[in-house]
Length: 204
Image (tube, rainbow, N blue to C red; front, side, top):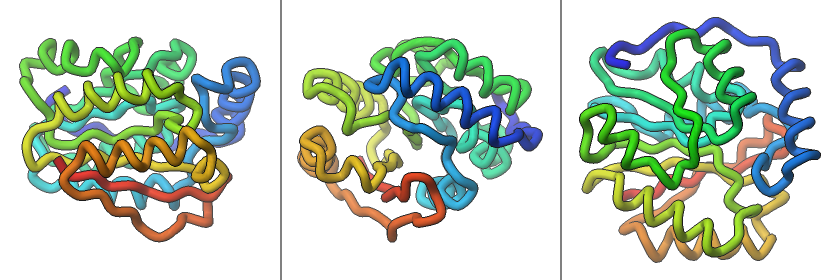
């Protein structure tokens, strides 16, 4: 896509019901029981600092709660696409944000889709992947792909629920961020979300 689109507002309960269903069936693939709140989505968009970004990618958009806030913030001509491994969530994001390009695949194939869009790297990566739920080898594979795909000076924005911060996977993820990026910082806790969340920003 070359032009930002104007998504229509989506009803929350239907999205939350789908998330809860998939969380119960696949807790290590779906890390959320509810869609990101407007407060969390807006905080993520602000943290992404999209001004001047030519290529923006969203990993794991779920039902599109953050996607619909990202799209109006993109500058004209920005290349944007999302990667979602769950076909039901990919469909929900397309319904919520008509015209958005969502590739149904693993985020470990990010560079393959950058190449399809004629890009060697991207300026911003926004992620809703459930890092605390992932095994160490999957965390490493994903972070290897993200750091390889992100242009020098690029920005990786993700978030973690407070409930997962002290799990072994959550602690390991924070350590890997600090090891792989030149600077990592986080914003204040977003309490108006279920569960409350912390937004991380990692600079390449």
